[in-house]
Amino acid sequence: MTRTIVVLNGPNLNLLGKRQPEIYGHETLADVEGACAALARDLGLDLRFLQSNHEGELIDWIQAARADAGGIVINPGAYSHTSVAILDALNAFDGPVIEVHISNIHRRESFRHRSFVSLRADGVIAGCGTEGYLLALRRLATLTG
Image (cartoon, rainbow, N blue to C red; front, top):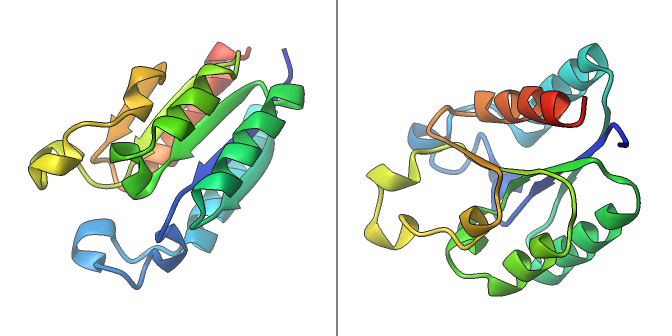
């Protein structure tokens, strides 16, 4: 199995560190990418780290991952709660999928408690801050071993 991991970030994650830091923290998405890249090197993984505010682009990246990725880490942002299309794309991906949420979505507004992505995810990490990304990479390193 390939050791390429695709990390996908959904809408508004480009504002990480600036948008609601009391919920999402002060780290930027570039900080998260740097930490993920360093850990991926240590784990012997190749990493593609992407962010889009557009549902279709996220779907295109999930479909492209079918060709050469061993796993996907996805923080779909608000699309977690709305996108059957992202769920369908993930269902067409054969490798493991780990869903990440920086905040604990179960301690927030009730509409955030349901995630369509969770129906496909092999694991869900929520409420661990940006460390959740690193936990997800460690898990995928085990699963794609």
